[in-house]
View 1 (tube, rainbow, N blue to C red):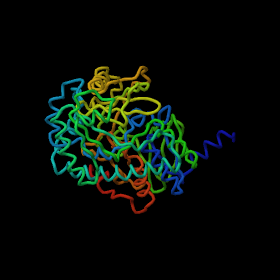
View 2 (tube, rainbow, N blue to C red):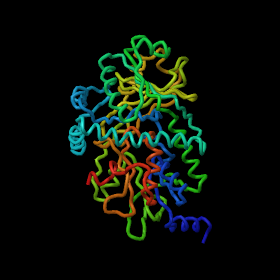
View 3 (spheres, rainbow, N blue to C red):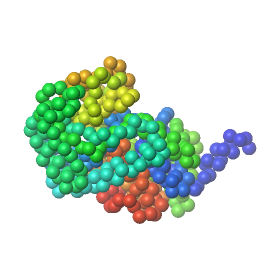
View 4 (tube, one colour):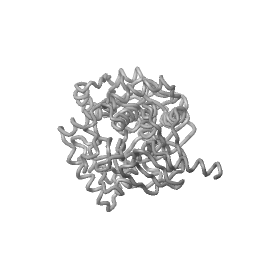
Length: 427
């Protein structure tokens, strides 16, 4: 047998490995923690490169401040006003899609104070654990990803919107999320990058930021250094599981493992259907534009709340991002929505864009209607696991998800309570 054939045979018959489908921040974080626990791991990625999905083009903020879910009191009324406005922060492309409309009805039912509190607590548990764990990872491995623990500011020009969020901060403080309310004139004096007319700002000192594409690349480096295998251009064609293990049929042959983890982001529903599961994940399309650094940049990440635009500055660039568009799996760049990012930045910032556009991007966030991920064993499948549905917070929740999933797979006491994220809540 030729050497190449022998290598293929060895790969195809290694049953001791845990197979992880998806090489984004979630899949690689799970791989890393499993490797540290002594497990063999193989990551399968369908694309041409690692972390090319939602992990690539987001704003890279690490945000315990974002514990409140999208499903909140008053959101339905606001969404109806925005529904047919193509450049609104939340946009629903009119189309016939029964799954989307079922999702929206379930989402609307969550827009009440009790469910808001429950989702906020559950999201805060993951975000707080991940924030501390990620800082530890950066120091331990070390991860060269422009990580900075400098906090994040919400900035407002609309006084009514400012007062509404100041009131929300009282609820967040009771959950341990610290904030500082800053009057408009004081904020303008502290942050010379903003234009006059700030009504106020809220600072979240516990937040942080990194460059997400470099974070994912560094996770891949560490996984490989610890013996993990990562295969790209390895598209999954089908899979089977039984008491003896899992067989994943791919474009590069069959991969056998003891267990498999589906960390496929917005593509999870397609695979769930093959298992007879209804996974209510909708692809929420986000956009970003990355520039060279302007002359005057903010001292820390900003969220321009009146326009729902995030601003992140790194040594290597400057990014405007955000928006939420429900348009299915349409991968076209919507020029109207990209322009809305720049328009929002021009309203708030003295130097709103850089001289050189480095990248224009869109990607799908995996949105559940309760704004909580699915983390745990696939119902009725002993050897299959789900880690999906992180919405806009995949980077922020990645380290905690890696630890929690590893704990569950290995059978250790979890670092945080897994109950709110169990996949069977949708069965």
